[in-house]
Image (cartoon, rainbow, N blue to C red):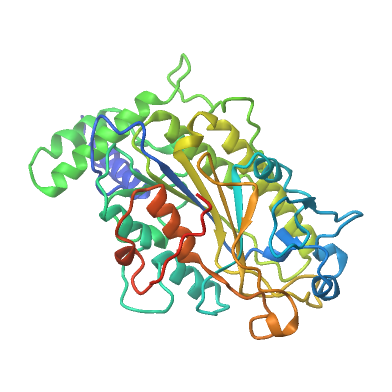
Amino acid sequence: MKRREFVIGCSAAIAATAGSQLESFAFSPQPNATQDIFVLVFLRGGCDALNFVAPVNDKNYYAARPARLRLTESGEHKGLELKNGLAKADFRIHQKAEALHEIYESNQMAIVHACGLANGTRSHFDAMDLIERGINKKGNISEGWLTRYLNSVQLEGMLPAVAAEEGLPKSLIGSNQATSIQNLAEFKIHADARYMNVLKDLYQGDDLLGQTARETISTLKDIQKRMPKNSEGQYKKYQPTRGSNYPEPWEGGGLSQSLQTVAQLIKMEVGLKVATLSFGGWDTHENQSYHFTRQINLLSRALGAFYNDVNNYHNRLTVLVMSEFGRRLKANKSGGTDHGHGGIALALGGNVKGGKMYGQWPGLATDQLDNRVDLAVTTDYRAILSEILQKRLNSQQLSKIFPGFGGYKPLGFV
């Protein structure tokens, strides 16, 4: 091998590896095939909870918004009825959330309303930063809450934590167990196959760098072996099971690609315990009737396809959908809604006590609103995460994962 080839090839290999943010793995060739799997879907931009799930017979809700920005009892914007709502109100879910409604009706999806960050900030950056660090106010917390969780449990398998998105979210900041893989077909060395062996030969020492490099290369090789290939050795397009129909990429299918990556990893049995992914585009200050409807349609179809695709794993799976905050009760003059406070969370899974809404409904009268303008928060987001950690992921160290959060009482949704 010529020196120039070696330098160029290894540079490409190292760049590709660094791009996947591989650090180190709790490597085990025999992952636990019964462990629970947690998938966190973060709706970035502030999802309008009151356009997603709302009490259509509330006179304050009716007066605050035009029909195109609220759910109605009849007509074009008629919401899908939900059994077991809150406060004896007629709660409905958006008409474009058919797949999610079906999962709810099958008692495998729960809805927590009026939940979120008790801090009160209306800043996207601050709210996401606090939630992903698992705190309520700024402090000396350097790691993400998922990092603290991963550090508190025994991990098995080659890929215990994966961010199916570009880069690691702050919830996984500081973790040496997590990697970002948005597309498994790109999880490889983008260079001549010879360089994989060259790199392996370079890292033979017992130091941390050598051990990490060897485990990284071993993981890359193992994943590549598990990926189906055609007769020419090229990766085949992923084929979902049970006829699951994910939205196409041209529809804004970044969410679809991320969910398909998670589905593939679950089926590969590589020890996946935690997966995160993001779905942006919820900052609907203008023309919300168009943008929000499109977003809900994509979210519902993608999650519905994913849930159907991993049908055999429902008893091990818990999916949580959340956002940094909700949006204002009253519509603005641009056909949208501005940053609000109380939001919504969805929990899906075989061990979710679904077909029901959870939390305490604060009401939408002016004197019941936060700062007299926004849906109030009655359930701290950490209570929702704590219930999943304790009941499904066997965590007994909630005080370390969520420092400063006391008085946790389970809602009972799992």
